Length: 299
Image (cartoon, rainbow, N blue to C red):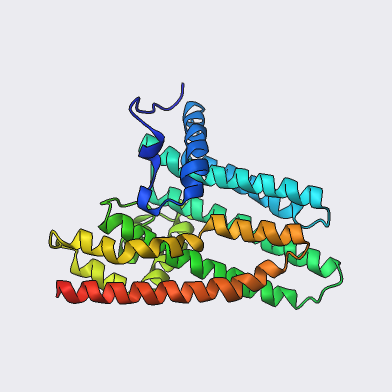
């Protein structure tokens, strides 16, 4: 017998919030993810099981990018799209069945990193086997670190938008202190979960270090905020959502597909450390100014 899904559930009820959804998400990934989520609920899959299934398919996609065969590369792209569908479906399943958890959010993030680790390794090996310099590993490492930083920042800002504007708090929007408390309470007998919580604790601390003004804003509103705060936050930060979305998975995949079709996949690393990092700096600068203005108003 499957997991019960409320009869009133709709695809819109599985959005994080329409404000932060891109057009590709609204018209493709959310509808397909919703149908997959209902299927997985009937099969009694947990969100973490869906995340790990997506990771397995994504790792396979990364391997197919290794070959200098466009047909295999296109198959890898198709599997990569399926991976992203499952990455949407795990969160939608959690929201449909009210089974979101911090451990589930950690598993989802870990699965995403495994997929891109496979991609980065296989693209580097492809370049070396094709006669390129082994120095590409340094470029790949710089790109991977850039990717991690970009994802960390936009997750932090989008979760803040969901909290302050939409009144939603997701399982992966915890403060470092909350995660630390969960880590300290977790027994070492659950070794995997304990290590996962420690990793996420460090992740949350780095987010707070990268955007200290947002941390100050959260502290300032911990005991409530003026009625006007929500609209002020939305007015300042809604125009910045599109820049955060430009650093998210969908545009990143399109860049990767483009360089694969052109036969120069290592260009993806170059774009990561140049164009996407410049965009990251812009996003940080604009949000810092917005948060400073909001903190000043609260004070």
